Length: 101
Image (cartoon, rainbow, N blue to C red):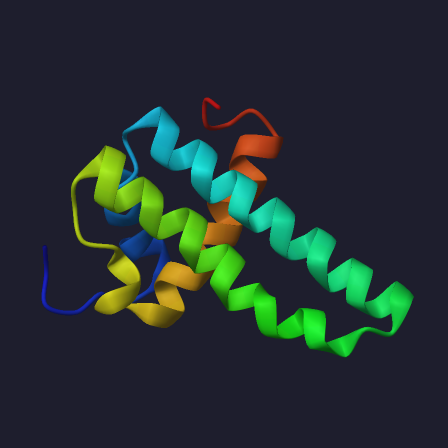
């Protein structure tokens, strides 16, 4: 793993290499979907306290995938912004069929 990535385009292949296990990817996808539903629920209901659950839901699902299935350290610990972007790009890539669910 390089010390620094010059761009997200350079980082994303590394990110995908850290998400080879299908269960890990599914947990990431589920976490991202639950984040979207939680944000939507907060906006619709006006229950703004739901937004406090967003990082717990998103990272909780992802970290379960890494610790119990992928057996690696989440990239978010070293590359938080690129990793967050990677979560959403991978979510889109799964939705569009580019990455196997």
